[in-house]
Length: 157
Image (cartoon, rainbow, N blue to C red; front, side):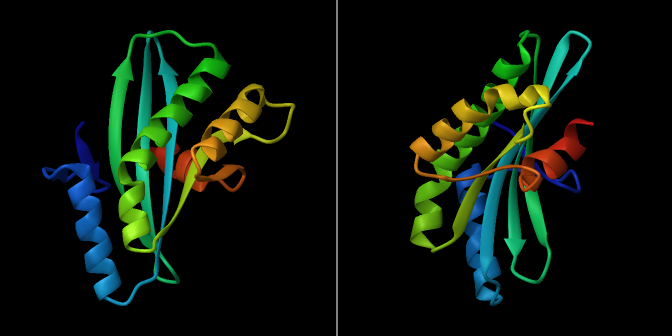
């Protein structure tokens, strides 16, 4: 799984080791960190592109993120696509959660799902929320889910 920084620089270490180094570096500088993980997708012709982001927030001092892109020819209903996004975020959150516990870093999983029933993505809200909370992770949906609806969205659009 290839990760990169926002500036395009490729991350050569396994993502877990890169995250560990980021946590150690930023906390050594005195920053209190919070990590938000989210995925967004965009259908482009026959392809569906997914972007998963790990967003590091430095309390009161901005943030930075790591990005992973992936394309597939698989076809999804809107509900399926929303749940695939959530699954991709949970996969990364699960891989990294012991680091966040070890270094006492708060972590949230963000879902690009609207809480307003007038939007199509709302069809997946209950399942997504149950999936994320059932894994023991904090959950945010739109409009608070900026990792997926802003950061990952910027990558796929």
